[in-house]
Image 1 (cartoon, helix red, strand yellow):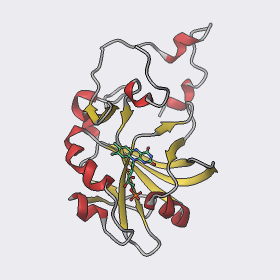
Image 2 (cartoon, protein in one colour):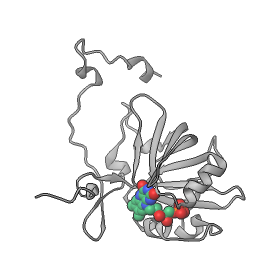
Image 3 (tube, helix red, strand yellow):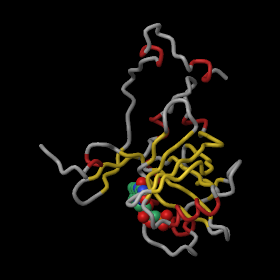
Image 4 (cartoon, helix red, strand yellow):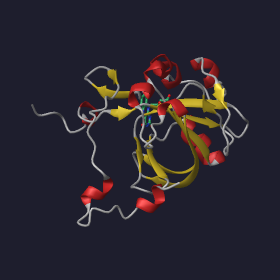
Length: 202
Ligand SMILES: Cc1cc2nc3c(=O)[nH]c(=O)nc-3n(C[C@H](O)[C@H](O)[C@H](O)COP(=O)(O)O)c2cc1C
């Protein structure tokens, strides 16, 4: 079957993250964002594709800070309340019925009940006519102990990370399962040694 080129969400499941920000005046904002991608291993950068008319973008421009909250499937009910248009003066924690998790480094709070939180500062904006890429620098990364396995991987059974795929009329929520299979990073290299190995040692 051939799909129209714009229907990328029909073939790439996207993470449903919630980005929390604060206006300069201290108003709390939340918006779901699916176009979120870590930039290479082992950098501390995250790239977010945003439309231009977003309170999230305005707040990031104004304060240089935001939190990418990683949600489980139990946060599905918060997607639409935080995605609907609301005026910049509305407190979106209240609108979405979500509670704060105080942040450690940045001012905007995270969202309680998520399984991980990336506190970020604005590294750079790449401004194009039809979209803007927000490059964030992760300054504090935290995961719920229950969602972190001893080898440092995400316990997907516990976290139930929220993803979506797009159909012609809807966002379909899904999560991931562990196949139980893995390959070491080193397996990609001729000497079977991961050149970044040292960075992962405590
Ligand atoms: C699941 C989901 C994913 C979304 N992903 C993005 C995205 O990656 N980039 C974007 O600009 N808008 C995205 N949106 C739309 C924004 O969340 C929506 O326009 C929201 O009202 C923006 O809120 P704000 O003005 O408070 O920033 C998404 C919406 C949903 C429901």
